[in-house]
Amino acid sequence: MKRVLHPREVMQQLAGGEPVSGEALAEHLGVTRAAVWKQIAALRELGLPVQARTKVGYCLPWPVQLLDAAQIRQESGPAGPPVHVHWELPSTQDALAAMQHEAPDLTVVLAEYQASGRGRRGHGWVSPPCLGIYLSCLKRFAGGPATLAGLSIAAGVAVADALADTGAGELQLKWPNDVLADGAKLAGILIEVQGEYDGPCIARVGVGVNVRLPPSLPGALDQAVTDLAARMPRALLARNALAACLIRHLRAALLDFEREGLAPFLRAYAGRDMLAGRSLVLQGMPGLARGTGRGVDARGALLVEHEGGVTAIQSSHVSVRLAPG
Image (tube, rainbow, N blue to C red; front, top):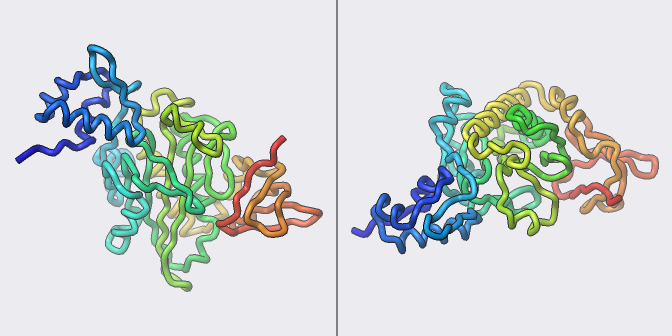
């Protein structure tokens, strides 16, 4: 029976960053050189910049640490809830949704690559293989969805704290769900909730972190983006430790939110709030196109001052940008 080569097998051989010839790859993996070339082409198509160097073979521009479920579990809490790692998923949110009724609370799903990763307001989340952290965490709550107002604020604080702990430096939070470095997006959060009006409900908290962006990607997006590699040159060699740190902070924040709501997170959020005191442009808010950011209220709503009054914005359909100039 003909052996089917998986892209992950090729990636494992290239992860060290050293060139490997097509002939050596084929011999080691027990396939033809044509099969190797096909998977190299597939990895490139997914956004991984595999180079071909004359006379030496294929290589990545830098070494990469592949995600390892056992290592992540050990570093995030070996006695804790399960951590599942997949090579490819449509999205970690969808995978978690498919198992949410049987999975233990605080179960985490990670993927090396998402075919249909998504962000807030239906936007896609670009997920090149092995170049980011893409995870989702499950949390059950006794109350209904209305009791989770501000959950994205709490999750944002947790993600920013985790990234800062791993050496990412000064970070900012942009309502309701973005983590930024020097004004450029570094990470995003997506909250999806299912449940009865009066409870209980289930929240799936998705987190995407740019560890390294392919060189062609930033120019193709409609906003400024950055990655950890620009701030932490060894980020790709510490992806398991980074994932574990994110999981620890996120799980702790979800438990704190369950017990105390948003209150414990408001001070930390205010310290990182990039919109406070800034002139803003809003889309999707009838009658309010511009204003000045005034922080968030006790429920996590964005406060915007306009013509002497302050409006609280909770709608997930509103887009907020800093005014030019």
